Image (cartoon, rainbow, N blue to C red; front, side):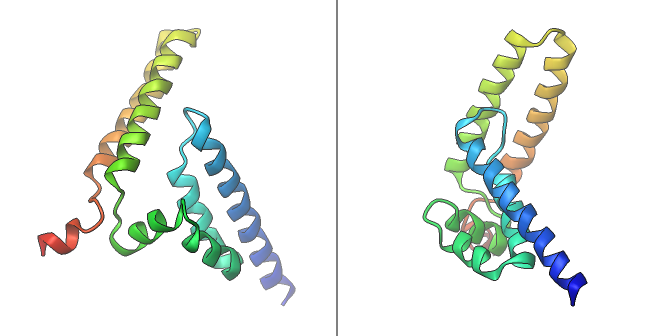
Length: 130
């Protein structure tokens, strides 16, 4: 019983830390919101059904989570927001990095994420394709 309680507590801590990082990522370029919110929902499902339900009913995060869980889909608006944020981050890294290769590595990772993101279906696309 104690081990199960400890496991749930660790999942709950991961959920809250992920959610906090996701919320910070809304205003801080370079810190992604969506992956942290998805991780928060995943961890909350294992640590706190109440937090999990709250996330799914949240006006900002709920639809994104439902779309992801149902179809693995990301809205076009979220894709554009993430792409613009990554582009701004790449520019800032290019300007402020002490070495060119540091900015290049970070930009390459963001480019890979952007490609993956744009290859994800948008909500409703899977059911239309069938």
